[in-house]
Length: 419
Ligand code: GLV
Ligand code: MN
Ligand code: MN
Image 1: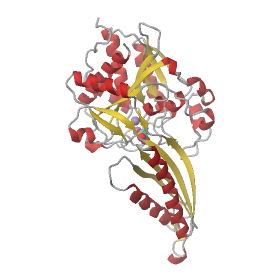
Image 2 (image 1 turned 90 degrees about the horizontal axis):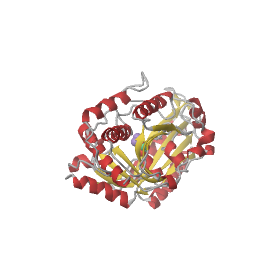
Image 3 (image 1 turned 30 degrees about the vertical axis):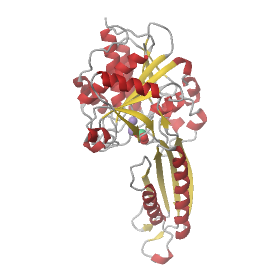
Image 4 (image 1 turned 180 degrees about the vertical axis):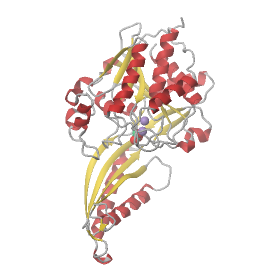
């Protein structure tokens, strides 16, 4: 039997490929290219059942909390605070196969190696599949991990709706979860000694630098807004150009203004309008209403807040000049989080010990780990994205060998934290 703290035998790339494909098959039929497994749907729950069955098959204790997070535990030699790893199983519409899934598959295969090799560890190991990480459906990301971190309450769950008007609490109840009992899902800092997540980079920094692995220093924050522009719907033939109050042309100007505000410097600030709906959506009607979402990301909290104010001011100025009205709704807020230096150090050490020099880099995307930082020391390992780093796209790609190597480093770090 290997000694406590030793590395388990390597994870096989073929096993990674097998499980990535199995999860990719759990996807909404007829939903276009790629994987669609939205937050708080029956498909997301089915993926969690696959995770549960796998972990239970290894002899681990598995439970699903009221928020839909699934947790598998392997006891340590002492009943003390646990160390954990994991990621999420939901996807955006027309997603790739790797975002979130990579970290869950790494957790599964790592659990398998630790059990099969009989590796000893003092602290309990916990393997986690978070629910509802993607903000794509309800506008707010990391719902499961926010709940365990005490950042989202039952009252919040009753406020959010998806684009079809389905409430988050309603969606949760519809798949057998209990939005009114999520306070019970909260993680106590006394029970957690550390958490490390493996994720694909979702950018091209690692591939461009030829680095096999990345260690994240800071996760960007995000401010999400919904802007509604109200003009006057009218006949596209009857209404002369100079008398129009066109909501869509005003919104279009807002979109370009925000792009200009973000600029082109790669300084950690990003502004995206990802959804724009023109109503009533008829070829012969001037749009009377336009609803758009704005996602502001930044690694600097002060600048993130200032940008959000600037966005609203600039949009209001455009609306005023064009004689339309602007209203805004604040959908979600997450602060940038610096990840725990000691965990970062462990990740760097375990990589260097096997001759891999990691690149330290920020994450532009949000991650569950950002929320878990409220509970315990945290770290994140990135594996390279291929295909130019595209993600939230069916073209998302990562090499299975890179993922297996990432899982090995994750395992080494986790066991060191569990010593
Ligand atoms: C999660 O994928 C995010 O939106 O950053
Ligand atoms: Mn993700
Ligand atoms: Mn994502």
